[in-house]
Length: 66
Image 1 (tube, rainbow, N blue to C red):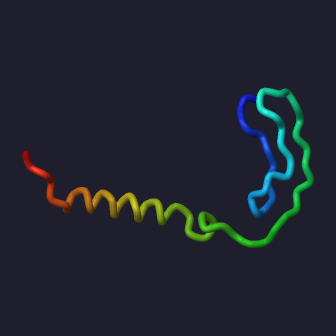
Image 2 (cartoon, rainbow, N blue to C red):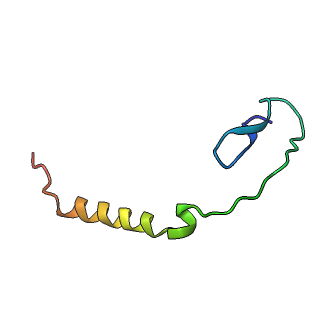
Image 3 (cartoon, helix red, strand yellow):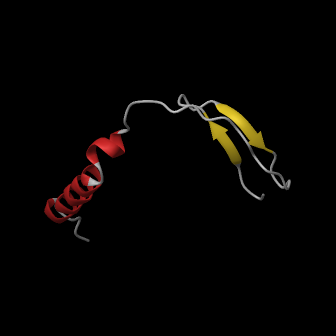
């Protein structure tokens, strides 16, 4: 394990963790929760929107001339 390996709860609190650079098996009890995330609700559309908006602004904003 050369990275972070952990299990977090629905609030982001670390419940179980394996130390870095140690070979181990991480086992934890998971509690299913109801609800949804913004990504599940909107998908990738906000990303497309902001990329398109950024490209339009870059095109329309006046460029500094030397």
